[in-house]
Amino acid sequence: MTATLPGYDEIPYESLPITETHPDRLAVIGRLFGLAAPDPARARILELGCAAGGNLLPIAFHLPGTHCTGVELSRAQALAGAETCRALGLDNAEIRHQDILQIPLQGEPFDYIIAHGVFSWVPTAVQEHVMALCGARLAPGGIAYVSYNTLPGGRQRSMLRDMLLHHVRDVTTPRERLAGAREMLAFLGTPLEETPPGHDWLRKELERLRDARDSYLYHEYLEETNEPVLFRTFVDRAAAHGLQYLADTQLHTLFPSTLGAAAEASLERFDDLVAEEQYADFLTLRPFRHSLLCRGSDSLTREVDLDALLSLPLYTDLAPDREGVFRNAAGQVFRVETPLLRAVVESLGGTFPRARPLEAIMPEALERATGAGHAPTPRETASLPEELFSLFVSGGVQATLCPPDPVPPEGPAGSGPCATRLARVLAERGERLIPTPRHQALQLDPVSTRMLALLDGSLEPAAVVEAMIAAAARDPGLTRALGGARTDRQRARLQASLSGLLGQMERHGLLVALR
Image (cartoon, rainbow, N blue to C red):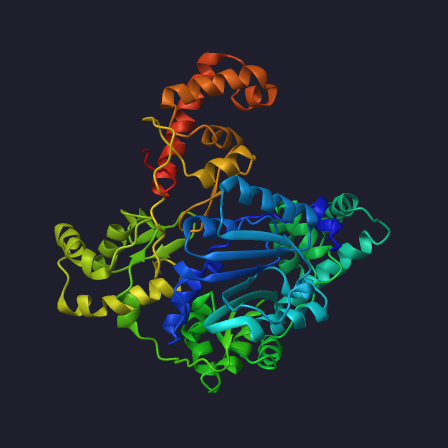
């Protein structure tokens, strides 16, 4: 019988979509560097340490031509994921309760292998098997995503981890260890008359962990294994299994210019990409990486083909914030200086989550810029590709090889709002992080989550509100969340919440048509 992980059974790691691991994202990066990456919409995908399928199952749902296999050692999480898979009726996905070491090196190849939050947190033998699996079963042109803690930045977190582990050294149960860690964090925040060297980092980390999820605190700081590694060491270990370094999903880190002119000049001494990135890690004290690997026999180029990239459909969730500044759904801010680039971003953002080729939106963007009193000059038009590429590298705009298939209409017949089956099934299970077709996580409050579960098309908005009022009469917790038992106040609050929810869902492509 396969073993399990008590810590993960009792404190499950939050299972949610991790945008940067989506095969479409990986394939675009591969194509950027000349890799003939397989079609993400028809790919065979393996996720190691898939938790309850929160990352893998949305891929399978929105890309029905894929075949997705997830492996998870926590029995509780694997069973939960398998049950969600059944509830969704997915015949192109499976989640197995299995030890990574039990996965054979022989078998059908995978186009994409995902190992997020696994490598640094498992023993050396498992790390080597992860590398061996990627080396043996990655298809030609395939991409493996592996995230891990790195040196030197990981050493700082190791310092805090050592203190927390010392404090809970005599405690055995996961929940008690977690409580002890919270207690120690409070102690470490004790004010001092004078701030010793190094405390600036500790203070910021304590602030970050104060609101961190229990699952993150426990599994990042209290697990038996957490070994950061030098980037160069990671690449060398991959090479021993016939793999080569492709890129990092944080594309801006591949370009020294993002560190400033002095750092860029200093890093020019390195002809080797891996050496350059390693020394950039030293400069920035980088604590974490999201590395992409491919087969050593695959042909790569480091000359970016801008025309090829910008020939792909583009999309963005950026929305204007103030003059020259845009903000995405996660709250990140992007400066967009030139009028033509602003017009392009506004045109793309206005049709999100749909992707559109640049050539298709240029007439609209030119008209938009001209109408705002900024008719683009030939020089501004010529500089647009490089400006768009900079925005792409920083994560403000994305390209796609496989726009998600339109979610097919579903029953029952009705005229009310209908959420995707994926969204409803997760909401029925109390999940408050809802995957979108763009593999983002839409965070909902408890009331919105309850309402989402009702959006199967059979109820008009007014009927959804009345159904929630009826539910509150039977549920004291829901009554408290609605501000009390007065139905007039409940109705007003629910109407506002439903309006906001429907707006969010329409924006993110989570509403579907009915038959």
